[in-house]
Image (tube, rainbow, N blue to C red; front, side):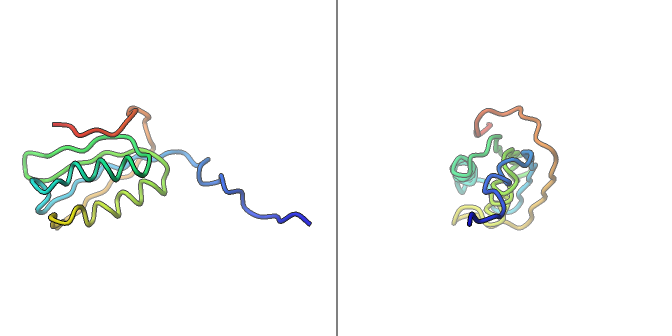
Length: 105
């Protein structure tokens, strides 16, 4: 008898989401942007990461909700030399404006 259950593609069919993340603490000069790009690419996300004038880092990512949530979790820790003190996250529907993930200067 065939097994009846959830399709494995259900998560893949959910609409993509967007997260705008501002990371404060010791996050500049510690390879935060470079490692964030590696993590985003590993998760199949698009968007960008950049330094802000006040010493924080901003990332905007779009992709599957589970991957975006994993990226947000990674942002709470960052690379080994980082010391994340505060994380602000806003979720919204994806706009589809990014093709890849980049570091903005």
